[in-house]
Image 1 (cartoon, rainbow, N blue to C red):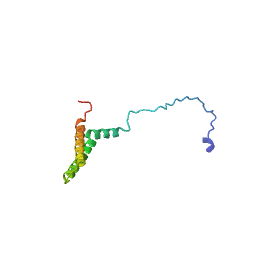
Image 2 (cartoon, rainbow, N blue to C red):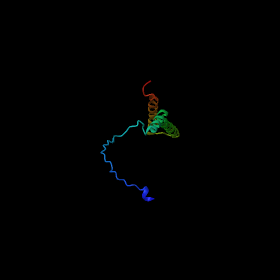
Image 3 (cartoon, helix red, strand yellow):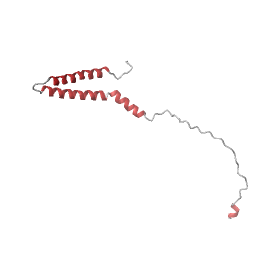
Image 4 (cartoon, rainbow, N blue to C red):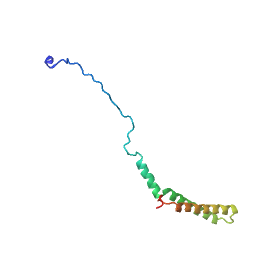
Length: 107
């Protein structure tokens, strides 16, 4: 039974030449893998978290230093100069914060 089902392959194998061009240039699918990070950065920028945080810390330090200065019995010239600089820096901080806007196009 084995001999009946077993057939001999007497045909010669077919040999053909094949030319193949492979494109190895990178393919841009148009999707940016960092798009979620860009959305997060725009959200943080539009909420203006860092300027508000810096201004809040400045207000706390201004209040703390003013209470310290008013608690002094006989403040010196250097101590009053320090408070003047802190208050002047606050005016500059607020001017920078109020001068910037979310719309960068000037609309």
